[in-house]
Image (cartoon, rainbow, N blue to C red):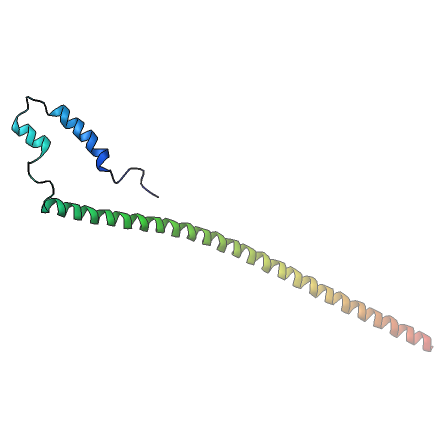
Length: 136
């Protein structure tokens, strides 16, 4: 989930507002001390110190990007785990229903076998009685 704020500002985004503020703050009647605090020290803007700061800022930006990717992956993993849990619960319910249905079917088949055996025994007895009465 990306952040709701803009992490990287372009120089144009910042420069315009800073220049207008400085223009308003720096008037003709300002002294050198105020100018120092508003403009910063005079000298080269791109020195070894600024290069180090930019290097560290780039490293921080890389770490932020990696962490955002990691957070995204963790969220996606959580969603997949939720889906797997739902599927496993569904499979468990289906397995329970299958087990109950198979027990019911086994009982039906057992009773059907008992009925067939009873009918065969009855038919055999009827034939035996018919045979004995035919002999007499």
